[in-house]
Amino acid sequence: MCGIIGFTGKSPAVPKLLEGLAALEYRGYDSAGAAYFTPDGLRTEKVGGRLSVLASRLSGTTDADITCGIGHTRWATHGTVSDANAHPHGNGRVYGVHNGIIENYRELTLWLAERGYTFTSDTDTERAVLLIDCLYRETGDPVKAMGEAAQRMTGSFAFALLFADRPGKIYAMRRGSPLFAAVSPEGTFAVSDIAAVLRYTRHFTRIGEGETAVLTAEGITFIAEDGSTVEKEYEWAEWDRTAAEKGGFPHFMLKEIWEEPTAVSATLAPLLSDSSFGLTETQIQNIRQIHIAACGTAMHAGLMGKYFMEKLARIPVNVEISSEFRYRDPILHPEDPVILISQSGETADTLAALRLAKERGNFTLAVVNVPGSAIAGEADAVLYTAAGPEIAVASTKAYTVQLAVLIYLAIRFGRIRGTLTQTEADGLLAQLADAHLYIEKALALSEACRHMAEKYRDHKNIFFIGRGRDYALSLEAALKMKEITYIHCEAYAAGEMKHGTISLIEKGTPVFAFATESAVWDKLLSNIQEVRSRGAQVLLFAPASLPVPEDAACDIIRLPDAPEICLPLCAAVPAQLMAYHTAVLLGRDVDKPRNLAKSVTVE
Image 1 (spheres, rainbow, N blue to C red):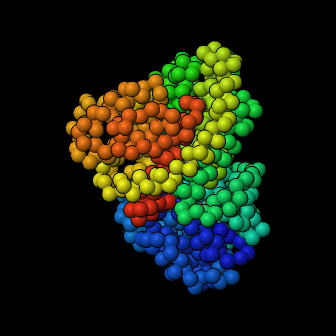
Image 2: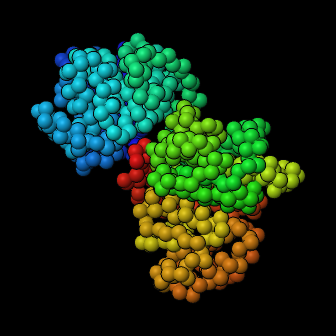
Image 3: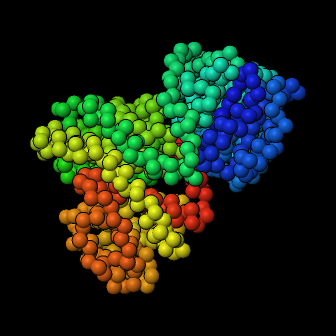
């Protein structure tokens, strides 16, 4: 969630730190800061506020002799948003920046206080850095001090640290939270997301779990927990810098919605040409139940995937929020695979769910967007989505590519288990291969969505309803609307409205209804009539060819006529566009909504 960048090399460091932090803004932040070596010693600057304020304060630090520093954007977990709580933290001897949560910080506070330490912030990070300082004073060795500190800390972390008596060096370590190392002709980087340094290099490697990296202008040394040196192979980042820029769009979110056809096509192409995904046909035939663990939008993709898996492959599917899955002692049969879905591949609760499944001996299949991520590295098999970088906090193209992968798996599993004939499976795969064409048609609904956003933007509450798979779609549509517009939104299975929720319907209440599943259209129509009779304003999302009575809805957005297997992918687009246009009209910070972070790397 927090963003980290460090640079040491042969050219000015502060401009690179600020550029990198700007590239990490999508992760969400409320504070920013930097620490760096000057000819006169170690200096730090930090603000409880926007990066532009930090940049203004650092405007005089572009000197060529300032070539080593660390930067940070904070998303508050301990303590309010303030200059004092912003990172870096330290005491002049050591400064550090941190992503993660130190769960035993209260115990560390008491331990450090007994040794004479005082505190200037409310953060767990300050305690961790002072712990490292204390141990460094005892050992005289930064790597040893960091290793001993890691053993004393409970929780997840990624650290980048500067030691005042070790100029020109950055010390980095991680456990649970993401941190990468990268090399360039100008020097070396430590960074939370490789997209932040694509201007300078694409050569990167992941700092391993429990490893410490020592960065100098000449190179990087990696040290394992036992003190041995680790040889690393560097990867090449396929994304170019322009993929993380707006490309003429007013917001990243809109750009990423328009990238969905390409992302879905690029994701499916390798799957349609190579059907291997880690499970043997015998394993697939013996599956009793599939478990899906994910969070937020990825969990909603899992709910939609459940519908297709059960319908096409006749396999029971259990979809759970990762934070619930990991704590409820789930019942996992040895032959049940566990599918983990995460855009970043770093989602803390989903990573913990993965590790729980592996402890139980279950096969784990990851659906992630980032090669080299923690979940990708630890899962038994990985299906990569080809969405490219997703910068806006509200996930859009990640959802459609995840759903496309799950529909693909449902078809393949159905063929292997005999619930689909070869002809049926081939036909469905051919339809799925054309999904990007129907998504392109859905993009043409942008102006209609903007018009509807003008009509409904001033309401304080919006209800979303659907039946079957459209209930899952309603959940995602409501999430998109609430997270970037701040309008209160709730999604309900349409048949449940009469069991309590309909009491909230009054004259003028907006109800957005999705009708992509023809088999339950008549039932949904009855539910629409129930809310209409109580004064609701109904906006219906329905395929162009679906016959809709004139009095069924106040407004209709007509979806492209697509095969039913592609309709959920198409319908996601106007749901996203409705949220986007509403947020713009309300003057919201579309790409960086309040209180949210892109990659949730803490519990």
